[in-house]
Image (tube, chains in turn orange, red):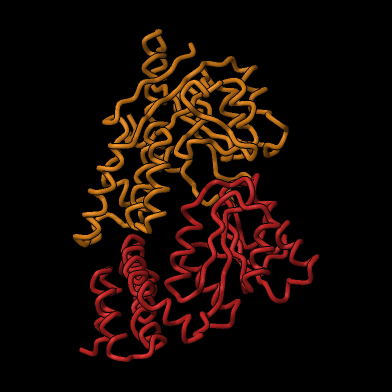
Length: 240
Length: 212
């Protein structure tokens, strides 16, 4: 299975609370009218400029091992390889919000409309993550349609640049996935363009395979800890 | 309420039209431009920075205030140049070679300007040579570098090395920041400082130029 995923604008419009959190505004904080206005204006720009797309390609475990190995710069041990070894199904994926959002951001900054630019950037960051989550759900749906019957099965994403998978892994991932079909390119420094994009591997199997303790060397230096949030969501039912 | 206090309040509220009008009013009243800058615009931004640090307000509020301050600066800048009023320092900033991420670097630039620095923003994907050359030509006190990728972080070390090779390490200080960057990494490459976020970067740069 190797297919382009169609997303509508509505699919990727992020929840207001998530955008506020991305802006550093805690839940329940009193919000000035001017900030409400910013969020509304950013949402209008987001809808105007977003052009979401995705791509999904299943990959055998052995081939993924080669993609993962990349240029040999991964951490000596990482949860990704351990989890992949226990996977029932694997797929490479990439999602993007398109170049229009990036161009809109450039224009806002050039016009010194910093607050609106920053708000739109936050919205797009949340939306890009949301699109990656949609790819997870689409993959699960595809697998179930094919008779995947693992009762507590779930597909979670892992990306180069996180959890011990060196960012140079993008090169082998791109060579295998060929996401140019949805307008994605990779720079020499392994940066995806458009910037608001996510790529990686979807690892499907019983939920328990995704459990790992944050005790790897790189965990101490990790600033994001989003893996923990996603694990919590997986096991608390916050994620369907 | 004294007009300069009103001006500071207009900055705090992020009202560019009022900041512009009050600044013009003060200029016409003969208030020295440096006084308007220090006691009106920077005073307002200092309050904004303090409230942000204690989470009373949030980053969008800071950015609205910065935009308002710029409206006042647009009025004052020619007069400050005419009077030969020096800024508290010039800072060259940029995302390092290979890195196209702008947002963090932009925030640092906005907040440095709000604190009264002259900022030369070289944008993204900036080669080390360009950073050093610009700092030298513009008499910058500090080079601020941002990276969001582990693959681009080594370029920060190249800038530090270039400064050292040209005997500029004593006059041009370096500060680094960005998601994968740490204080430990800053020490490893010999950078003078590490800023963990935009607000902290301003404090760090003030320390580097002895203004705190």
